[in-house]
Length: 393
Image (cartoon, rainbow, N blue to C red; front, side, top):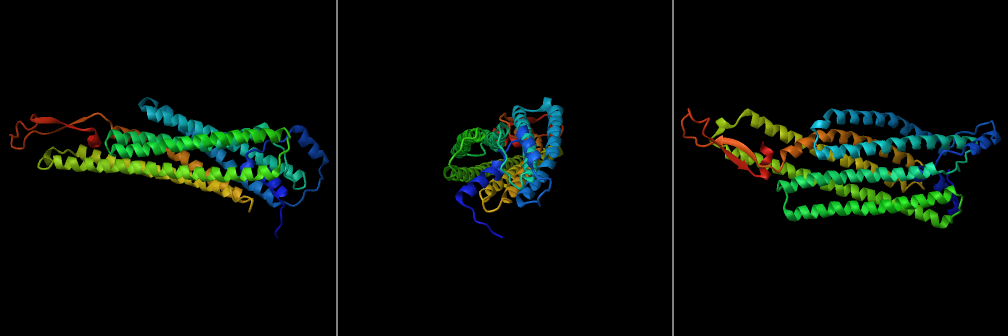
């Protein structure tokens, strides 16, 4: 069964129940709830598609509150346990992780509360979901913006850290470094400006709604659709850019490690007796760690792309409200994967930083093969390996 909506009706419906605008829906005023309860009929109407939508959203978000809280506790335990051995970048990444986790938990709690209140109000008002907005709802919308924006900042930070390692080890040319660095900075600056303006718009429109100031639906509705589509496209584009950058950088580091292994083998030709098992095992361990880091980078990219696809689904909400449910499903799962991988990337990141440190490393090799066996141990010399070869120690 299909129905035809006028622009006015579609605007009102979209403004009140779109998944993007659902982030704005606050708790009902106590006196409004009391009056609605006393005046409503005691006979409940059959569940509407909109009410089913609220139930699905509630069921999707509620379990993630417990999951994210457990991850939060796990992160704190790991941070305390490894605090003394961490490097500066690890501390920064953990702080960024804690901020993200706190925002995610607040977002989930507010969303579950809003979905429950929306369902209750709809049941008590004959299926009418035109429930009130509040200051909490405006804050919730800003929290959602910040949550997305903060994940992009984390990706920017990771790209910056590994890009610096590439430069220090000469894994990339100065020109390539400049291009990648400019791309990295430009992307985060553009997204910062957009999300600042978007948040300002959300606050202004939210305040107008809370104060009961009427706005022209023929103007507001196209603006809201445009902003939602733009936000989704920019989020997807920036995620794609950061993902490409991070994986290019990881690939370059792996190539640098492979080149170092080749140089070590060439240096040790004819002197295999002095190549200890320790060195061989160390090389294998470092190659494994770098591959693990690349896999985590790929996982972070996939997680953000899932969220980006979810946001793009909001653009199709006016076709079906259940695109909002798809958005929440992809977004919640993507954030869960993103946070889980961030917890796991700290140890490999520390190891990679140690492998590719700037300092030259001294490795003892034989001074001459033709010397007597009695003096071979004492006839070693220290051969300095430049920063680009620091991976072999």
